[in-house]
Each structure stands twice: as C-alpha cells, then as structure tokens.
Image 1 (tube, rainbow, N blue to C red):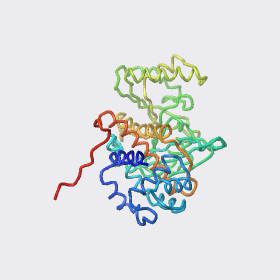
Image 2: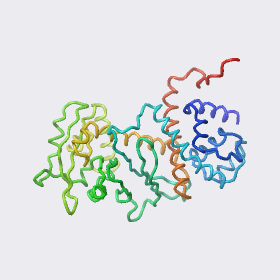
Image 3: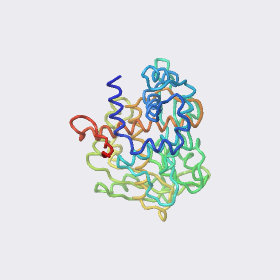
Image 4: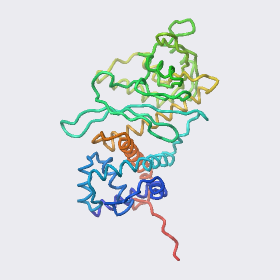
Length: 370
C-alpha cells in the first residue's frame, strides 16, 4: 500500500492545477458520503475506469485499500455527478499537451463522430462498438451508443446520428460512404471525411471519373496543400464537394508505405503502385464551400479529429477498456471522459518522464512560511 500511495502522489503532480476546485465548481461533490475527500473520490473513479473493473469490484477493491467504503450504487451516482468534472479535466490536459481544441473555423460549430471496438475482460467477454460524437472545443459528448460488433446496422455510419443545420461534421474513412454524406447534407450540415477511394467514386464536372492521382502528384513538396472540385453520386442527385490534400513528409510517407506492406503480409489486401503513391498524401473530402474555408483550414480542422483518434488508440492499448457501462447516457459519458483522462495522463507521464528530476516526480510547491 505504501508503494501504491506513493505512485498516486506522483500522478497527482500531473493533474491540472486546481483540479479539486474544479470538482467543487462543477458539482461533482454535492455529497461526499463514503469518501473522506475529493482525492479519494477521484482515485476511486479512476480505479473503475482505468483498471476496467466493474462498479461492484471497484467498491470492494477501494474498501480493501482503505480509500472508500461505498456501495456500487453509490459509486455509480458519483460517476454520474462527475461527468462535467472529468470532461473539463480532459480539456485542460489536452491544452497542457499542446493541442488546441479550437477549430480553425471561427463561428462555425464543429462536431466529431467516431466509433471504437472494445472487448470485455475474460474468455466469455463480448465485443461492443461504442458510437459517440464530441462537440469542439467543449468536448461535450452529445451522442453515446453501444451496439454489438456483429449484426445489421451496427457498423460505422453517419445515418446513426442527428445533425444540426450549419455544423461541420468530422469523421474518419470508415464513414466515407455516399449515403452517409447524403444524410449529413440532407440535414443542412457539412461533412469533412478522410477519403476512402474504394467506396467513394469521385466524378468531374462532366460526370467522368476524376483523375485523382494525376492531380495529387502536383503536390511535390511536403507541407504543400491543394484542392480540387469533385462530385459524388448521392443517389437522387450529385453532391458537390472538393478534395483537400497535403503531401506528407518523407518519413511519414515511409511509415504509411511500411504499414501497407505489413497489412499485405497479414493477408489484408495487396500492395499496388497506386496505393504506394497515395500513401504519400493525406486526402479528405469535404462539402464545405471554398468561400467558407481554405484547404489549409479544412485540413487543420481534420487534424483535431486525428488528435482525439490518437488518444483513443492509447486508451485502448494502455488503459484497457474494461467493463462497458450499460446504465444510462450520463454514466456512459462520464466513463468515456474518465477513460480519456487516463489516456491523457499516460501521455503526459511519458512526456515529462524523459525530463523529470532524478528522484522521479515533481516537487509540489508548498505555502510560504508565515
């Protein structure tokens, strides 16, 4: 227990400044029954979301460790109350990690949609797909849904969400389908998705196949962005948009090409000259008009989606998505923010660990003597 308490103190040194005051202001501690302090409350919540324990198992472990003496029902209620607290802690850690969640488009609401597959612990643990959407820069989760991985209508699709007129929707290549894009446009919103050439045929103004590779090859230097008007067959009518692209650095292109080879070795497709050529670029399709955003602004917006995607990759590999919450939207969102917070903490720990003092932790400033 001495070592565990010491490790916890090291983690506390990585928390955002005034994390306790933030908990009080957000109403996370309207009642502390069963917990001696805010410190014990947050520690217990992170045991639940970080270790992948069920609520009941977390309550037992917290009692054995002398941290808290609460029931699983009480812990669930505290998790619900901590939703905004955990969300704002994530916001602050992202800022400390050097990422601004403010989109490059001023005055336009931006929304990120994504999904991730998780597996519950144990040999009989089921696989689930978490569908969620986050509003930027607030990180507010306005949609959270759990579905089995297998089954009709359980895949990644934009038709699962309801969109607001005027917002920009950011999504990865899994959502790059004509029906989904048509759904977004039909609700008065715009979309920016990573291009999936296999499922999104692009047309020129005359309805012919768009010569994408010939166009992107004109981007000859790393960091150079370009854009080209294109059309997509949306069923009843064609959807106007544009391809915004940027050439990767040589090292980033080599990494992407090596990944293609690894996938081919695993039996996931073949390496073709076209695939190797396209691996040198980042390409997105957007319906946002050029008059409202330049290619550089569109690509900067999409980069925010990628930052959160990277965090979820760390979340799945480091913090282990354990028992999936199935109680209500509020507890599910709080659990999601808790997972993000654990992933961001691990990111900050890795960053400062290379430059931290020889004794292994930050010195917490003490109050000056009276």
